[in-house]
Structures are given as structure tokens and as C-alpha cells.
Length: 198
Image 1 (cartoon, rainbow, N blue to C red):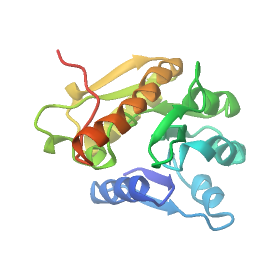
Image 2: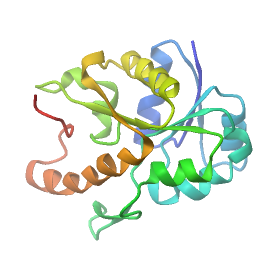
Image 3: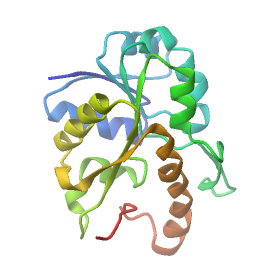
Image 4: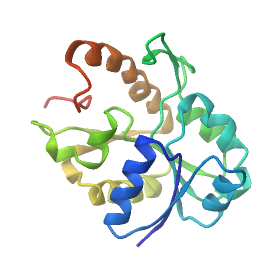
């Protein structure tokens, strides 16, 4: 059992919290109440960033002390939304939210994952008609191994998880969010993941 804090109690955070609790972990969800995120992060071994990506950097940079020596699992995408509320552009072109977080939190081990799919797939990958991919980006191999094990707890087969390398590789997976609005407009809001055919 791992003590996990989920920052963000929307669809993504709530979905992850429910699934991780079901898998036997001790999970705390931090809402927007003053001090809630700091308290949750302080007592957790792993912190999951499921806050809206546009404000994630400021929110998490303020938790530098609480996040020291922790694993920060970043599942958010930092985007500028279009008129219909769907992603229209990246906030950090030529970089990524994960890289910005790692730079702001040098004593925290940032791992990017689960950001290339609609949120239901994060905790139910086997419901898709073909095997999806979950990608890992991060500089700490041990942290990535821990996150890989969490993904298995969420229903991901080990062969569906691909380690892309250092945290800078997150700029590639974060850019994949630009597929999403076009797919949704074309096919509707049905669960899907960006995957690599092999």
C-alpha cells in the first residue's frame, strides 16, 4: 500500500483516486480549500497532479517544501483552450509542463504519464478495442519504476507501458493533446488513446 495524494478533484482526479483506492492504496484527494493541497502533499509518498494544466506550475511551485523528495506524477496538459473549451494550443511550446515542473521543483522526481488519452482510459485501458500505450517521461529510473507499478494497479499490462526517456520527452506526449479536439469533433467524446502501432 502506498500513500497517495491526488491534487485536483475533477473527472481526472476523482477517477484516479477511486481506482487507486480500489487497488488498495491510501488516497487523499485535495480540493481547492486553502491549505488542502499542502496538507495532502506533506503526508503522501506519491503526489498526482490532476489539476488543470494552465495553472499547475504556479500551484505546485508553491508546494516546493511539501513535495521535496516525493514522486510527482504529472497527468495534466498545459493548453490554451479554444472557444469550444477544447485544447487549441500549448502553453509551453518547445518545452512541456513536466519540464517546467521539474525545473521549479528540483528536489522532486517528476514523472509524466497518462496524458495521451481521454480520462476513462486511464483506469480502464482494457476497455478499448486494441491495446493502448501509456508513456513514461522522467529523469529518475526508480521513480519511473514506481509509477509503472502504479499503472499496473490501474489495469495496465506491463507491455503497454513505454519508457520514452528523460523528462524532456514529455514535450512529445504533451503535444499529442492537439489531436484530441479534432478526434472529438470527428468521432464524439468516446474513450480513446494515442498509441503506437507495432
